[in-house]
Amino acid sequence: MFNQQFFIEGLGCASYLIGCESQGVAAVIDPDRDVQKYLDTAQERGLQITHIIETHLHADHVSGNTDLARRTGAKIYVHDAAGAAFADETLQDGDSIKLGNVRLDVMHTPGHTPESITLLVSDTTRSEEPWLAFTGDTLFVGDIGRPDLVGLEAARQLAGDMHDSLFHKLLQQDDSLLILPGHGAGSLCGKSIGSMKSTTLGYERRFNPALAPRSRDEFVDYDINNLPEQPGNHSLIKKLNRQGPTPLGAVAANALTVEESLPHFQRGAAMLDLRSKAEFVQRHVPGAVHLEADNQLSNRIGYVLPPHIPIVLVVADEAQYREAVYSLARVGYEKVLGYLADSLEAWEALGLPVTSGDIQDIDAHELNNLITNGNGDRPVVVDVRESWEFQSGHIPDALSIPLGQISARLGEIEKNGRPIAVVCATGNRSQSAAALLGRNGYETVYNLVGGTSGWMMAGLPISRN
Image (cartoon, rainbow, N blue to C red; front, side, top):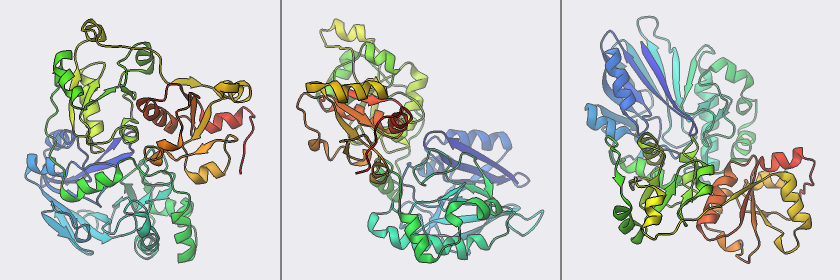
């Protein structure tokens, strides 16, 4: 049996290629949009990809299933409860899929979503007993899948389903079972997923806080409380995954001159500048949205630009462009028109404006000085953490607007000339919020470096009102 995990840092997504080398057949579990890696690995191992299996319809990233199917001829499998328009075959509890000497038994484990499944994998040359399990978003390292991404109204019912799936199905397996989850650290599909990429059922039984002894009602309360912000754009992602994503195909670098890009901007396209913050602050096009091209791009873009707007990128090179296109496509941003190949000097030479400065990083003591001594320049502090985080302690007089709500609640942040200081737990989410405020015309925006954690470590006052 051959098995390889593919992991996307930032999004925390895991996918798998599993197969029987003696028979030369394989399946891909939960493919992401960059499908070339599965094709390359399969070719290296002498495997033909014949099956594509989704453990559920994802809410945090768009699948590469239709693209992979088009390139390989493999059939796509998903549980019947998904109501997926694209599926070639639907699965039921108790079904088996054979890949040569490898057998994948389907266990229906609803809870994260109604259609979620776990695949129990046996190497029949060694034993009929399952050796490992692809748990999708049911069981993670140190965590379980959240129940609210289908909709808040369904969360309590799904939390109850999760209890039954875990305690009456999955935890009935042997402690030696190797657990290969659909997500790792960085994903928003759980509360606090561990950094290890795999675990065992026995270890999780002993040390996973979600699996502690509780009544069903106590488990439901535990499962639905203190959830992190929902992945940006998750409703669209679910819709795309249900109807079947448009195959992305190979990504070709599309270089645009200034003259070629201008008509796109005149028709409402956005400029997304992915250069380093230092480069952006030194010089950029007014109105451009800045997000650094790091492994958080997929998580942040949903808070600063809507997915229907065409985008022209400003990047360091073609390699960064290709990586960015995949990062954006993974979360449903498919209207990337190309990248600006000309320099900003060429932009300026045509009489077009450039500017400098932007969102300013500020540390805890600097922000406290502005708050206590700023007079008319006293900033409005906007805390973009979740409400339960805010209630556990926040900067006095801060306005609570969770990151996932900030686009809809911009009207609560007045443009009265006062600076805006954006705060989260560590400075990560607040950077996305600051970029959104900058795009919407707020002139002076501060991002608190180190977030509320840094504020507390500095010994500055905290309110719990």
